[in-house]
Every structure is written in C-alpha cells, then in structure tokens.
Length: 322
Length: 254
Image (tube, rainbow over all chains, first blue to last red; front, side, top):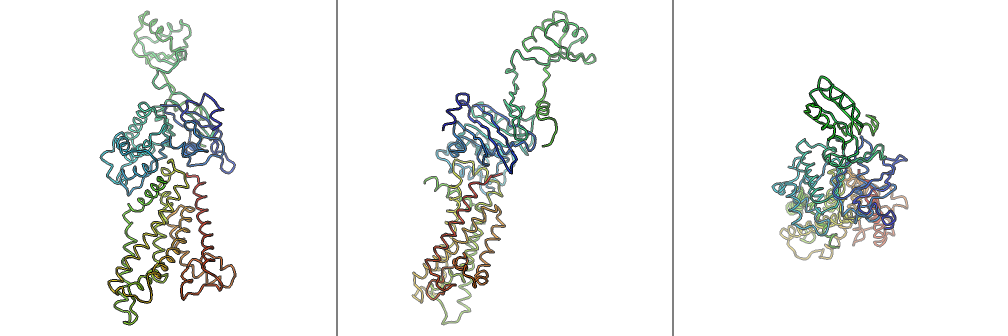
C-alpha cells in the first residue's frame, strides 16, 4: 500500500493506473515499461500495429498473464499484491467471449454470479435488459450468434458493477451492425454509469468514433497518448485548424485572406472554388465576417482533419510490420 | 467457505449440464446387469454368489474396478483441459477468486464425481445382486463390501489425481484421457518388468492396488505393508497436486 501514497495526487483520480509494466519473455521485452492512466467515464483506446503488445498488456492488467516488472493499480489496489481485490473492480471481455455452449445464457451468468458475493437476481435481470437479451436467456449459448455472444459478454462483464471495463478486440468478427451496437453500448455505459473503458483494437476508424483518448504503443513501448477532440468542443481556442472555404470566387477570396494576419493559405483550387487555409480557431468568425463584407458568397466551411489513420501511420512509422 | 461451496457447485454444474453426463452411469448399469445375467445363466449352480458377494465382485479390480477408474479418468480429463479448449478459462480466471481456489474447487468436484460413480455402482449392484441372488449371508459381509469399495476408491483416486495433473499440464482433453488410460493399462507390465529391482517398492504402480493387503492377498514385494503403501501413495498425491497447483497458478493464459 506504500506506492499509491508515495506517488501522490496525480493518480488519486485514476481508476486504472498502469505503472511501468514490463513483460519479458526470453530476454525480449514484449511490453516495455508501459505507463498510462484511465479516469472515470473515459473510453480509452489501446492502439498499435499487430504484435505491438496490446493483447499482452490487456492480459497483464486482468491478471491472465504475469508481469515481469511494474504494477497495475485499480482504484489504488495492486493487481500484483491483491489480485482478487483489484479484479473485483474490473469487468473484462477478452477477445470473443467464450461461454459454456451446452448451458443456457442464464446458466452461464449464474456461474459468474456464484463467483462473487453480492450479485442479486435483480442485478442479473438489469444487466440482461441493458444488453437486450431477455428473450435469449433460456436458449443454449451454442445457438447464439456471435453478436449475441458478444452481448452476453458485456452482460457478464457488468454483472458485478465494475468501475472499469477491459476489452480486448471486442469488435473482432462482428458485422457493421454489431460493431455499431457494441460502440453504442460502451458509450452509454461510460456516459450513464461513469464506468471507465479500456479497449484494444487495431480498427482505427472504430477507435476514432468510440474513444475520447488513445494510447498508442509499438513494440511494447508507449508512442504517444492523444486526446481525440471528436466532438469538436474540446479543441482549444488558440489551436490552429485547417479549414476549407467553398466560395463563389476563389481568386478574390485568396487575395482577401492573404491580406489578413495570422492566416496561411495552404491551397487554392480554382475549379472547385475552394480555398484551404490554416487559421486559429478563434479567428474564424472574423474571417467569415471579412469575406461577407467583401461580398464574397460563402457556401461551405469544412474543417480538414487528419484522420486517425494518417496520424497513426505517422506515429508508428508507416506500414512497418513488426 | 461459503464461496468455495459455490465454486464447487459451479464445477459440478459444468459436468452435470452436459448431455453426456449420464452415459457413464448408464454404462455401469449395463455392465452390472450383463455380469449378473451371465453369472445367473451360465455359472455353475454351487458357485452362485450371494448379493453381497456379487457387490464385492463388482468393486474388485478384476470386476468393474478398472472400468470405474476409466470412467473417472474420462470425467476428470476435461475438468481443466476443456476450459482451455473452449476458451472459457479467460472469463473464469478474471473473477475475484484466486487461481488456487478455482483449481481446488475443480479437484473437489472431480472427487465428488468419482464418489458418485462408486456409490452408484455399489447401490445398483446391490440391487441387482439382491434381486437375482438374494441377500442371505455368504462368505462376505458388509465389512468386506466397504473395504473393497474403499480399496477401489483409493485406486481411482490415485489415477484420477494423475489425470488431473496431466490435464493441467497438457491442457488437452484427448491427450489427458490417453495418457491416463495408458497408465492404468501398463501398471502390471511395469511392475512385472521392474520386479527385479529394489526401487519397485517405491513405484506408484506397485502400491496403487491396496487389495493385496486384504485377507488372502500377497504384496507384490516381500515386506511391503499397508502403512508403507499408504505413505508412498500420499507422497505421490502431494507431488501430483503440488505440480498441478504450481503450474496452474503460474501459467500465463494467452
């Protein structure tokens, strides 16, 4: 119990705190001194190319794989020193959840109910309702589709009211509808119940839609931690953004904009009547006002974003296959 | 302790809910009826057993003892290995229960299983034997029945524990059943081959059949006693279970 006290306040709000975790197999560091924190209500993506150590990291967090060095704290409880205490706050889906196929969905959930004190029948009903499996509870799991199994997986993970969900490639093998459903569940869980979520995946577009933050790793090492300002509101006002204006006269627009301070014209496309500029976020209303005052008709304003994919390739050094 | 009981319930349900759960019991019933039928119709009149004698016969190694052990091995093999092959081990081990406790609950449920097999064989053979041969006192009494059953249980227990360990080590149901049965089958062969050497006394196979210490039996090696065999068996049990628990606790589930 010394460590959380020593390391101080920064961690006190973290639901999950990964501290210098290392996994060494035959003198090779599969995961190398990895550290990151996850807070309440946050959906964090663990990203990395194949073989980066995502799965190993996830499995070390939930105790399926032992750590060589470092520790993981869940609400301040060490996974190494007090595994049962720490895991009690975690719910997990490791890859596609596997159940006992010859038992019904209900029997499977009962299995997990018996493994922890204090899970009521009422809780089972609530969770089953949340994932919409009320009508499938009496069916044997072998008759379930992958999507249904995935939902039962969420149900078992939520059964004991965890503070954090740990998901390893949860959308593997799901169809687009299933992926979307999964995403909606996770967002709802994070928003409504304040549960933190850690998701590993290599589906970048998926992560972009789901996560508020991504932790990028490569060859077991932390590459970067990025906030995804997906909702737009979080972009700092002082930050520069790239914006494309569609106007009636690109040449005139370019001339006008070049006269303004703090604007860099990046690209002019005469045939599409588009002008792309780099400008501070707070400056955009003034640009619009200036264009309007000059009688330039404005049809569209679009932010040009680097997709997560572009950034990801930049961070991880292209398509190098590790 | 309450939660451990629940873990054992879980393990028992994993066996019980399988459609194949009743097959071993049915097999025992069929074999008992068959033996009884053959004895009744083709045995010589003066060699007819009584009900209790029939029961002793069923439990003895030459009777159904080996069959019971085989069935127990088959039942045990999947206990840990199936969790790996189904992939359910991942969801099983991320509960607020220590791995040792989970494995212990598996072992206990396996013990309950072999007990239930023996109990069923005993009750069923008593029923069939009583009906066909009557329950009048014969050469054997209840004490003999219980002793034979105990010897048979000890025999099963040893092989089941070995099987349990192999299941933990190999994680493969098929391999576990194969090795488990092979061990039972080569038992007498190994004892025969090694009988010239002194270490034979300490080999598992030599000690596993305790019926040699019952009336009229001769131990495989001169000077071996029941206490000696029990100690040797206990040491082996501790070794097997130790290997199982250490492996299960340390294993990285990938």
